[in-house]
Structures are given as structure tokens and as C-alpha cells.
Image 1 (tube, rainbow, N blue to C red):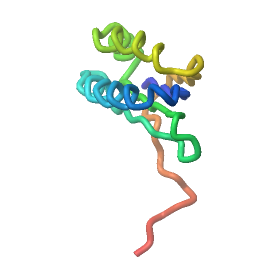
Image 2: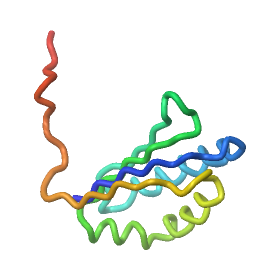
Image 3: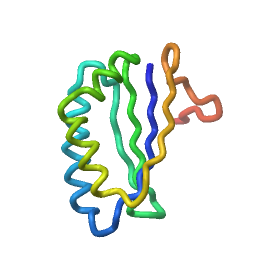
Length: 108
């Protein structure tokens, strides 16, 4: 399993353009056969900072993702809206990346 967390600072004047682009890209990535999940979040304290969380089945799915037409179009688009080079955390994990949180159990 591949887990990618990307942090991007968006230029304030490009925010509307970014939101339209990331919405479209999210739907495209989610339709890929090897994609497990793709979500993005706005920082609660900075409306122009976004975090993307991507999970792919394996490195082959991650490689296939980067080769898609929508990814090849999105990367140059992203370069036009970011204020600085995005930060990335890429993890190649064995098995399932998710486990139950030990500290919290739902109560009735």
C-alpha cells in the first residue's frame, strides 16, 4: 500500500482556480482502479494551505497514477497555483495502513 500526504500552500489570488482544479482531479483520481482513497483538506487556521491524502493499492498503482493523462495535466496546473514547492510524505507500507485507535472506543 502506498500512502502519500502532500501539503501545498496556494496563492490567495489563485484559490478559486485551485478549488475547481482539485475538485475535478479528486474525482478523476478516485476513478482509478488502484486508488483506495483520495481526499483533500483545508487547514482550519490558513485557508490557503491544503493537505492531500492519497492511498494506492501498491507501487504499481502509484506508478500508473502518475502516468495518467489527468495527473500529467494536473502537475503543471498545480505549479501555476502554488505559492511554494509542496511538501510530500511518501510511505510504501506492507499490508493495511489503517488500524483501530486504542485510546477511543464509541460509547452509547
